[in-house]
Length: 88
Image 1 (cartoon, rainbow, N blue to C red):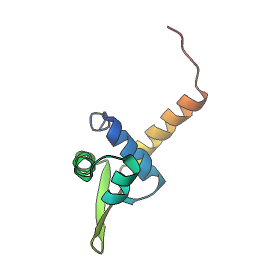
Image 2: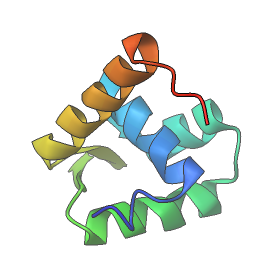
Image 3: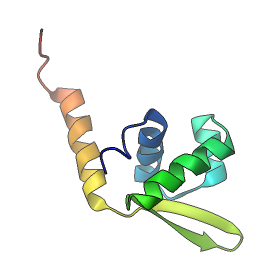
Image 4: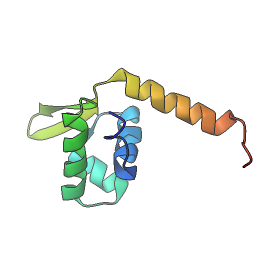
């Protein structure tokens, strides 16, 4: 799971999906990258069991399948906002 989350575009996809389910076209507009690239990253996340896809009419939507991912991201956000600053 962590390997699948190890790319900046996939991380951005997860953050967007935490807000709401999204279609591929919504994601590529939000992220500012090509539809092909978004689709490739969605496939990695889907095959890793992190997200799921479902069809509504002609449009395929994606949402987070694994609630552990949401909790991990919330913990990271909390740490980044209020955590200690470590000096090396």
